[in-house]
Image (cartoon, rainbow, N blue to C red):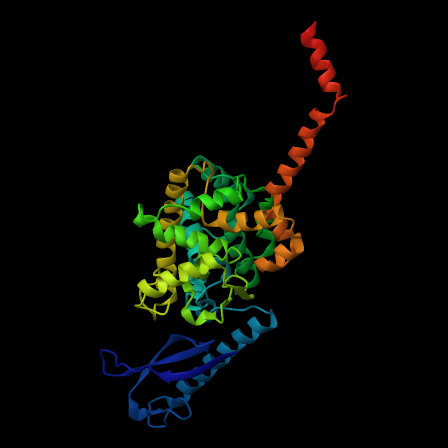
Length: 418
């Protein structure tokens, strides 16, 4: 719900007068718009928000103020009628007479990123910032409008990304962010659906081709038994890996934000940041050993792990710290894998993937695995288990060669005995 009020600014101008402004408030955010008039305090009626009779030409000036206020409400009513969740910048552009179609992609995108940060959705803000930077590195035209992002432009952006080493998975991430911005612009009346390029350009064609091979239980044991005394600089990475694996694949952000108040009666109780799902996890011995260690060494904050080094950080500071430490964590995991002889790509994602796959290998149902990981539906879990299912099919295929009357075997023997 928005509110409108005509007021005097707090600060005087060079003539010693106070500018008359329109103050628009929406969702605790404020936009101040100059109305091109000014007044001294003795000629202003704060209660009625208009000029006093002592002000020269007060009748004409008050009529102007009334008209401007009606114009402001008409703009808001128009947005509401069209069910547009407008921003204050969009309101100002309408009020000043700037057409929505003239709002550039860069202006709209930067406003969206700003709003995401203010809402504490810093992860989404960072993702949009990265894609915005990537897009304009390709585009060069910072004045481009939404209607100018054609299917051809999107195709060429894909070509640019491939030329710079991106695979389908990475390109898919960029295109989904660009599509989201376009959808938001349509929703807010900045552009029209007829210009939407993603009706023809299908993001769904971009499937991640990266191999997310899960670690076997034996490989997980290798990391569990890694000599952290010999390699103390890799101790934290080992601890986070083991902790995540035995807490149902807890992700890095949730481990980073975990506090001692989440440890209750031999259980870890927390809400997953991504889905807001509630978890109550029994503490297994490897997890207890790690908790005991950090209870002794990390006494500066209430956080379990020494990732956030002080409390009271802003959402942006937390996001920046997470990005820096997660990069280091993934790098250290690769070093550990190399030292213990694991020849697979390994990252924080692989931990969660390995947890699901190894549970499945032990005979656990997909439904139970899905529930344990907090997935919203079983299809998400199935994606984690695809490599496992493929391995089973491959094993079944190989059994064909073990059949005594296999046609392949008979033909093979005849060929080489001839």
